[in-house]
Length: 142
Image (cartoon, rainbow, N blue to C red):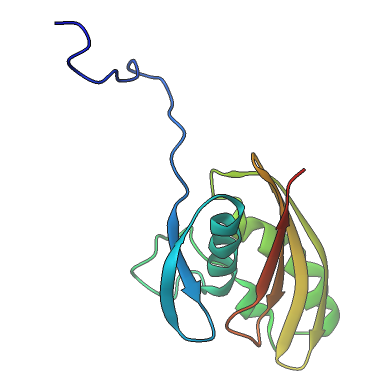
């Protein structure tokens, strides 16, 4: 009878979950195929950074960012506080090993900056722009 059932991990063992997701076509406003790996992580970063925390009941209280709260605030304060808020927004993703936010610039009703994340498969950088819906990201292997 050995070999009839698939082998399963022992109780307490951790299994690596797939990071497959649907690709969001930001320009067309629709889904366009599947993505995995660093591309999926980059998209997840953009979503976490662009969703206002506590604004939508569909998301848990620890998902999203509070960057939107800095728009319209004192420029020096916004630029100083933004890196920590950006890092906090992406730390909840279990694929993230290390997070480093670059400098941020506040101008009027816009806050822009970059964040770099190291994951198991490489390093990815995301540009953050509170004035744009789509942002951007680029990844590379380590």
